[in-house]
Image 1 (cartoon, helix red, strand yellow):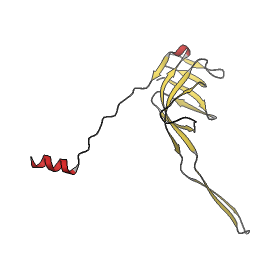
Image 2: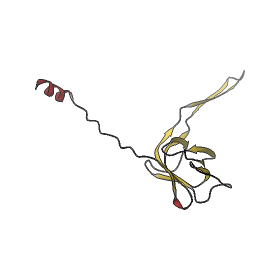
Image 3: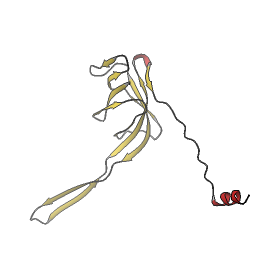
Image 4: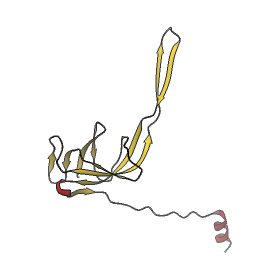
Length: 135
């Protein structure tokens, strides 16, 4: 199983092809392709490359699925016996991405996600169902 370790937003993530992650918010639009050049480790079935601090020429490509907000975290401050309290809420913003390709030196593809197309579901209305039952 091939994988890579990338760094983004001050955090490190272990990624493999077609994996969906929530990372720190990115300044990109929905559906855009993002390239991560800060690859710390690259491993395929045969060998492993460890960067010093990063692997030269290695990149990881991902598709931005959506920019989302996390659940609300309440921040509550109370000073006892002073009748002083403050309540505040915070929702952290995240980017939801899907890893599409892991590339080694020279653009050699180490791993690639398989694209699966969604089938269209045809909804039948009540009128269509009644017509088909009468026949």
